[in-house]
Image (tube, rainbow, N blue to C red):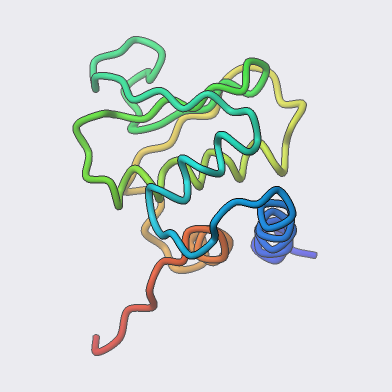
Length: 128
């Protein structure tokens, strides 16, 4: 299984887990990501772009502490995408030490969004 298939499979598992936990999957975007963090006992913290633990990134996860940090000056739809990506790291690499930083421009490739789309319900782009 390649990394993208693995991400999609894990995203589908997460949706099922959230459904069992009673998370309202009809909500979209940032509201769903916030609810997902609560259901997974992940502390989501919105921080200033200059916050030292971001290390210049737009979002990061500190896996050992189950903290996700995301810049507070980004639109909610961008924060949803970034946080969902970070949660993917937690689900796929739960024992990775340290942090995993991400910048929004790194996540624009369609292949990367496949797994995220399963959880966050990002609408397909058409007409391009």
